[in-house]
Length: 319
Image 1 (cartoon, helix red, strand yellow):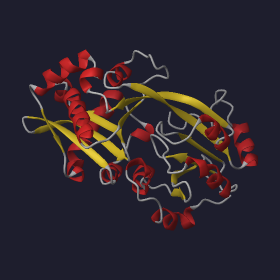
Image 2 (tube, one colour):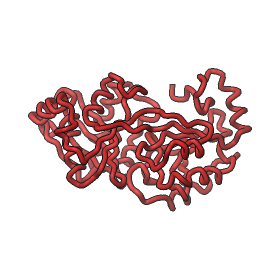
Image 3 (cartoon, one colour):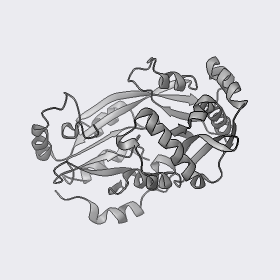
Image 4 (cartoon, one colour):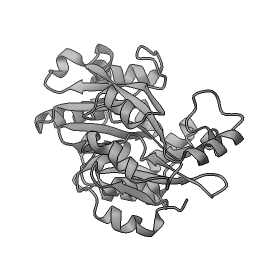
């Protein structure tokens, strides 16, 4: 099996011009130096991930979700890859135009609900869905911070990286979410990006990064300084973002999932997102074996992988 490096550049260059997570530039930003594989009919983007021995390659989605323009033809795109890769795996866009039978046919080896994502119907008034606790914190935050929507997201890279360093230290972030400065430069240049900044005495103390695709604004990342946490800047930022996206006529927000797998989880992130949402939509974890012989060989070595982990030979790689 040989990697797709040879023709990756030309394939990606001809990829989708849609914004946000769907855009080829987003996949390139998340991939860092890894090759990106663009599937032409479905316009899905995947990232090559070599196995530990370097002889085999898997395909994975560009964190945090897989988006494509035509889920009905994704299966045919994957068939056309033959056995160039061992497996392909993804977490699906909760707003994707698919149903569970279609996903199960496209990804016959693994198809299960992964997490419920909080979503917001912007046709509803925030007075009817924003939690009372959140409204109190909005008033408190607005007394000390000012919020602006940036007209130049790329010009905020240095301030954003500084805020994200606080997030890394606060939550001990590693793995795929520990983006490089170069990745952030590319993320903030992706078409469809929207950035909101909270300032205290002129200093950036919090930011939100969103991506707009069609009628949906996807919450991507947020980060705050210690002063931003003290000032409850996140509440003023989300309030401003909701107001903006409603005013420009978007239909939905996708806020992502909480820390756990249960919809009624009581972790802080779930409570926070639930307080801005009107409903939940499922995201699925899906997987497909493309090279069965290589998969069986690699799986035989993955003795420590728990039952159901897919692909088993990648277990523990971010530990």
